[in-house]
Image (cartoon, rainbow, N blue to C red; front, side):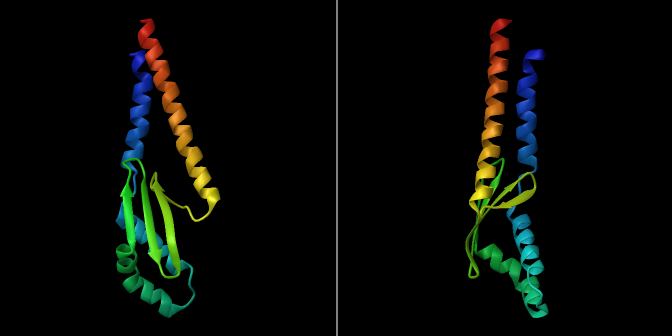
Length: 127
């Protein structure tokens, strides 16, 4: 049983990432709420509330990568908005800093997975 702990840990992490992967409907709702909160004009807020979901949905491409999702939205006031959805959260990639954080996060997960797998393989060869 001791040999399989690493495999169970990796499977558990992947399972959590898959379960908490975001959906396009979640992204559309998140972006709509963000747009409403950024305006003080009642007419704009009402327009976004009524039409925002449909406009965002039709101008968004989503890419499901199983453990995370990437959303690319082209709106007139914010062209080429790229957002990563992971662990039930949305991370806008409009700044290089956020992209670097995401890359470091994925690299850390990869390194941990490789270390756990190498430990499991080594334990399997010993016994």
